[in-house]
Length: 337
Image (cartoon, helix red, strand yellow):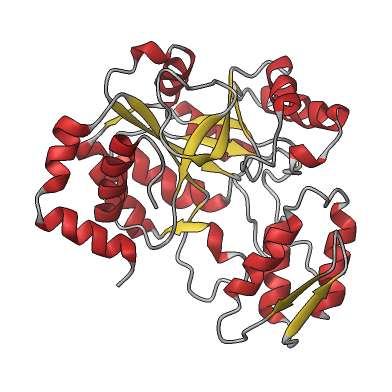
């Protein structure tokens, strides 16, 4: 039993959760971020971006609707721009990357419960079978027969691979990819290919990302389609001109498809993946707000519209865990777990 389960059971047994939800919650905006809603069985790519099965997501959305005041996309942006309107804990739902399962699984579940979410898409990926760098890396590490991987770029790194459980090795390689020094994507991927002795696939057999028509259908149903840049490169690794181009190109392409792109989510979203320069580029490109992927609950007095913090999800998250985590995060005013 992990710490999350122990804490949840204890809070439930002691009757703490209802008290925290009723009296302990302070004004704030808790923005949840998902990537994929999918069953992970035999999935050959990156399983860490699968944060819920369809059944789990349905259970979580049902709980959120019952226990929390969930803000739709337009209201969420209004609260970000006018934080004094936040008088209690509010919750919002977002998705990054624009995978096809966002349309096939998450969208119908949200509609069935009468809720709406914001979906941030990299415009280069829309409608394609393209495998992004994290899925390509995960595939190579999962299929390599080597017990040790030696990477030379961006700095020498040795990673052991447990064939029975390759996920730690996958995470290690992805951490190396996200280093500030990694500014040449192709060079890093060539190094992974050489270290694994596996040719990195560039496409999957089936379409991976939602199409323009599917995105438009989601927008008509009340969902918001925002930008996750054009190519999903880590903005903090790019020059100011390259960052500006990623932001502007994505917004222009979305506008061509009549998709209102008021907001952007930073790829990766940790504090090293964007900077004050990045925030200026996003603002200059015409976006009203931008989302990171760390930190937790946004407080009215400290919230900034171009670094809206979000709470990451994971596949071990039950509705009961999520309920406890939101209650504790609201009291602590930071992300719990």
